[in-house]
Image (cartoon, rainbow, N blue to C red; front, side):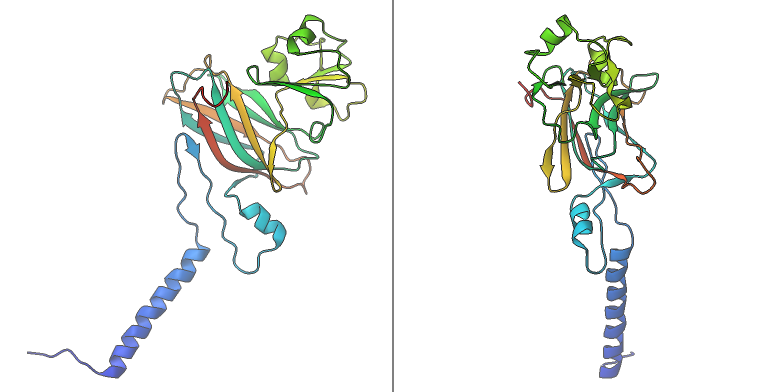
Length: 259
């Protein structure tokens, strides 16, 4: 019967080989992409790994797991629920807030249509008095105090040259061409006194922003696979501009998030 060698030199060699393989695996795991989870109601991005000394600006971006929207748009799906009259969407994002327009869109069965304005260079930091109608999902900005609320505004519209609205806000209230100035086409607010928009000032988390908005999706049909198809469009304002960064997305079909 053969005996297992107990040569100390051989044991040291074997231990060295095993240790070397473990080290290679550990270093390799830091360089190669890690598995990224995907949930139907919560879309998660992979955490970022940085090898070396991380500059403060890079650390600020990487502390929030995110996806770079390098092509100008990102599509994701969530499982549809029967009750979706109060659908709440929230996610963190990072953008060129002074130059970039970005919209949240949904597929209505034929094409993607805009639901809400995520960020706008004209509205970022705008200090006009505002009235936020949570149920309607709209914000009313005005230089003065001519209109107490949205109902008062739509009962007595000002001239189109002084009223700006984004596309989903105009569609929601049935504003026709010629009754308002499209907000997306403006470069300044010199002639504008009143703005109706689906944009709402976001909460800040460092240089990141938190988008939270409620929508009535009761008329939006589900796809054949029982999902809702969403899209974020965020074209880069210039070749040198930063990509739009999208953090984890949550879709809640609950009424208790808003009164």
